[in-house]
Length: 270
Length: 222
Picture 1: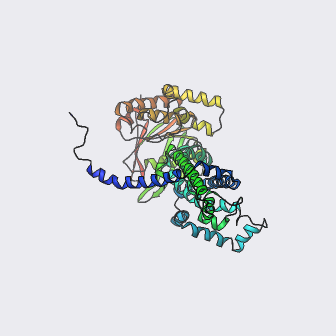
Picture 2: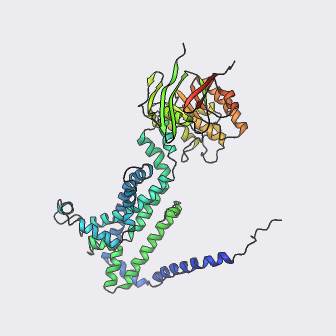
Picture 3: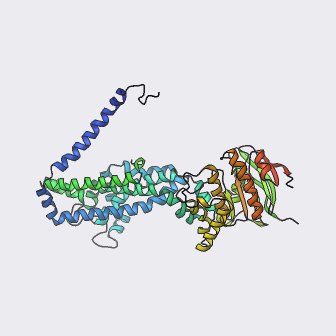
């Protein structure tokens, strides 16, 4: 008769599980603390304020637009980096990752510095006198795009990497030209990683704060997004409103995490 | 007078330490030619050069007398079945078979007729609405073959099409390949290892060795 229990004991696994349990308790405790600190009064107080609604809608709009553009750039970029080895490939591959590892505030400084050059000044103030990017909502989109695109490229490229290029060759022998091969074979097969790239990109830029503060500022009703709201509310002593916004951001991020897990993108989390 | 469907003239190709030099081969219209050779002798490379996935460094590839060296793979109208089948995993069996017609923007009625015709020819009508995941090795190769035949190619290239399936199914599929080739009158270039496989299908057999073609033998099929 076979025994289901292994011959070795569980004490080793229990020992290894201790750090995991401590970490999980820490995360759960911190998250729960935010929700426990919220009262119905603070929720009412937060949502009675028109500026809070503006901040939520601007956050959702800018994050969604930035994610869209990030994915639009990440699909061709990820494909080229995955399928081809060209002079400077490793440099390009490293540069793409730079916004992931660069301290966010430094990245914001780099954007500010760029808009201080003649090309940057022309781009910012050449068309519209009051500026297109600096202290403007478009500046939020730009900063979010720079960061989000890096994550999207990384995730989408890994999807192309895991796909056998022989399928593309096969499609071409069946009569599909390069474009047809790309949209009928490559894209459908890479769809889960493209979706995962979009979700991760969205989740990462949704909470971006430092570089946006530098580039777009904290103008109420104009360039205020949810992380900025938390900063502003804390700075004027309305901690309870900041907590409501924080809880809302936690819920939205968790919803994105569920979407990602549903898409099977667990392995793509960076 | 017999017409040559495929003509390879002094094909040269070098990749790493492997070198194919001055390979010349003519395959007659409606002929079933089997190419043998050791692993790494360049059989798959040659097949991929005919499909247009690789370009020879030197030499000429002709299809029905026309030079096709610079013709893109999608314009060659050559059916190709690789060893592993390479069925598109996101499509059903039917979706795989209709792929070649879809990209040619053929009408829906004609696509349906083609799919039904090749499905009957290969006895896979019962598989049409199944996903490709879960098909057996033999079923996968039949579907790959149906997909390659659905757009009525001039030439069929088979790269070890039965090597990944069990021995009984192998004999059965080889006999069917021969039957289909006779029914359609299509020219076939088939890469094979096993003598049994060669005996079942070949009109002529040639061995690729040291980057060149040797020992071309015609088999008596009467």
